[in-house]
Structures are given as structure tokens and as C-alpha cells.
Length: 333
Ligand code: NAD
Ligand code: UDP
Ligand code: UDP
Image (cartoon, rainbow, N blue to C red; front, side, top):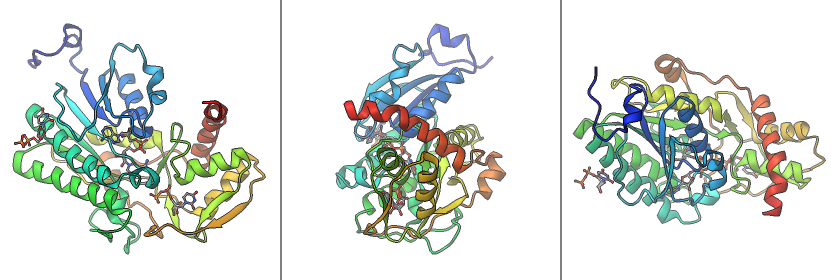
């Protein structure tokens, strides 16, 4: 039988397959869903989050769970814990949030990556990086395969996020080459679902909240720009499959739903599905807003046997149901 490290609890030793897993950014939208899945699988989870954009509300249902632990921690500082795997998700993800303190955004991506890689190097454990389709910038290749190097403005308002994530990828691959660290880099395309922050300005949550409140639906530009929307449960399945691959698979690997919609189509669908009387209004297009985005997921299909299974209408219905429940609470809070 494999010899387990001494720091494992006596209880954990009874379960060879149980792992202790660190999730940074675990109180955020995607992180909290990932934690739910890992706990369901029987693992122990440490969630490290500074609660900048995440919320205790996203993990309050785990309060008192014997295999769950929350640490208020900023990943730009070193972290010394003993774990078997690391998922590094800590980073504000919506343009409003990451542009609020752009210097901190770059620090979170870059120093956060260095600290999590240093931790993984010491523990000789796998480390997963939540990278992004933003590494492709405003793409001139469509759909985007992993081989495409991107079209990114290095000095614009989105650069703190885009270049921060690109530098994090560089660090991951250099730790891999230089120190043999086992890395798993996922490039995530627009993801949506319950527990999105209601006021972080992302298009799916904005449109649903506006529709439910009967406020105008704000289309930036003419609404002809496109995005591909992946439901969070599908994405989490992709994360876990990628983490479970052998050491030959490092990525980067695109995870997203190839179904591509214009922003105007999304607005119309949201109005129809909520039964809202909201009207559509056009607002100025943000600087450097990508015109189109669609993942090429051939690699994820081949290497992870993964593809999304939840269509936009089904995912939207679940997300609308979530916001119908929480919106009155948020108004009162
Ligand atoms: P989110 O804002 O809901 O979650 C990010 C979490 O990181 C929050 O809980 C926040 O408090 C925490 N955090 C931020 N800075 C931190 C720091 N310095 N130290 C510790 N914790 C910190 O966003 P999300 O949508 O759940 O995104 C999770 C990850 O996935 C991010 O890395 C993001 O870049 C990536 N991603 C998300 C999408 C998407 O569509 N949601 C797309 C591409 C990539
Ligand atoms: N680090 C950490 N936890 C650990 C080991 C390292 O947070 O368990 C941090 C450490 O503080 C350092 C970073 O990770 O700033 C990179 O570590 P590495 O060993 O690669 O580099 P060095 O310590 O030599 O700068
Ligand atoms: N968008 C919009 N109205 C909104 C919020 C966003 O038209 O109220 C547009 C935005 O300009 C972009 C797309 O929707 O073209 C997706 O925006 P989001 O911030 O969700 O993600 P990202 O731009 O990072 O893909």
C-alpha cells in the first residue's frame, strides 16, 4: 500500500482516495461550485479567499461541514499549508472588479501564481490554473484554438487582467520546465450560473437582474459582438477531468461552450424567458471590447473526453430561478 504523509489525519488514512485540496478564490462564483463538487466526491477542502469579490454567502451552506475549512487569505502573500492538490482561482474576473484596482489585479495574478507554484513545488503536488480566453484578447483567429497566441493590448484598461493571466501562464510553464512542477492550465471562456455576483457587470447577470427588475437592458455597442456561454456545472466537470489527467497533460486547454450568440440575442432570450417588459437600450461599447469569442474545444474533447452538456436555455432557466430567489434578499441586505 502507498505510504501516506504523516500530516494526514487518522480518519483520512482510512480513505486512500481522499485528498486534501486547496481552492484559492473558493468563495467566488466558480470556486464555490468547484468546492461543492470536491466535497461531494469525499475530499477535504481548504478554501483560501480574501473576500474581495467573493462572499461568505456563497459558502455559507458549508458552515460546520467537517471536511471544509475557510481561511481569509490574500494569495499575494505566501501560504504554508499541506495539501495534495491546488486549484488556483483567486482573481477578480469581471471587468468592473478587475479594473477597480488594476495594480492589485496584476499582483493577484502574478504574485498569486508565484506563491501557489512555490507551494506546489515544495509539496510536489499538482497545481491547476484558472486562465482565461482573455489571453486571446480581441482575436483575429476564429474560433480560438490553444495554438493561437492572441491579440492583446498590453497597456489598455483590460491589460491588468489579460497580461496578468498571460504572465501567470508563463510562470506555470516555467515552473513546469525548470522545476518539474505538475501543472494543469485551463483557459476558461465566459461562464455563468447561480452565485454570479448580481452587481459585477457581467452580461448574463446584468441582463437577468435588469429583466427581473423591469429596468432597461443595457446593450453595449450595437450588440452584434458575440460570446460563448458555458454553464458552471459543465465547466467544473472540465476542471476535475483536467486535474485527473496524468502528468503528460499540462494544457493550456480551452474550456467553454462552443455555442456562439450575439449579445443582442442573449438580451432577447433573457426577456423572453423572464417574461419581462424591459426595453433594450444601447450604451457605449467599452474600450478594447472583443468583437467575437468562441472556443475551439477539440483538445478538451480528445484529451479529457469532455464537452458541455447544458444548453444556453437550460442554464439560463436555472440562473434566472436563482436570481428570482436571491434578488429580494439582496434588495433588503
Ligand atoms: P469571482 O470574482 O466570483 O471569484 C474570484 C474569487 O477570488 C473571489 O472569491 C475573490 O474574493 C477571490 N480573490 C480575488 N483576489 C484575491 C486575492 N488576492 N487573494 C485571495 N482571493 C482573492 O470570479 P469567478 O467568475 O468565480 O472566477 C474565478 C476564476 O476563473 C478567476 O481566476 C477568473 O479569472 C477565472 N475565469 C472566470 C471566467 C468567468 O466567466 N467567470 C472566465 C475566465 C476565467
Ligand atoms: N511559497 C509559499 N508556500 C510554500 C512555499 C513557497 O507561499 O509552501 C512561496 C514563497 O514564499 C515564494 C514563492 O512561493 O515567495 C515561490 O517559491 P519558490 O520556492 O519557487 O521560490 P523562492 O522561495 O526561492 O523565491
Ligand atoms: N455587455 C453588454 N451589456 C452589459 C454587460 C456587458 O452589452 O450590461 C457586453 C460587453 O460589452 C461584452 C459582452 O457583453 O461585449 C460580455 O461582457 P462581460 O463583461 O460579461 O464579459 P467579457 O467582456 O469579459 O467577455
